[in-house]
Length: 163
Image (cartoon, rainbow, N blue to C red; front, side):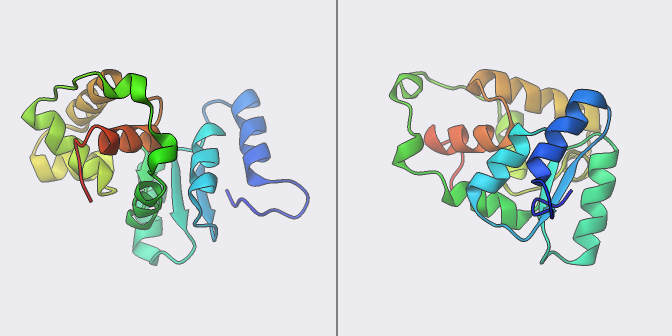
């Protein structure tokens, strides 16, 4: 899905698709590299975001990952999300909590932050994609994150990862 469409935004189209065909997987392919666009894509139901400047191999990997039901955010997009993490997103009430992750959860979190998808992480760690998703879900629950962008922001805030 492109964001810049002639008559309506890609976000609006994605929202419409979600309401009527919830099983459809949406990958955003865009020229927009601002954090707000990435976050809006997630909120509108997108399972991935890749820039139009990406190499064809990465685009193919992104399409295949999303088609398998995985999330996919390119390395460039991960950097965009990280760069948007500043003091404006700091939530003091959350900062008082202590987050304890297992070594495996930290490892998976690092790969997610680096932009790897579930299947790639599974291959690197020699575990099943389902195991990766289980760890990822536990990490999201511990951080009270609702999507990948929020997961990465919170992980940075809690200093669970660094760039």
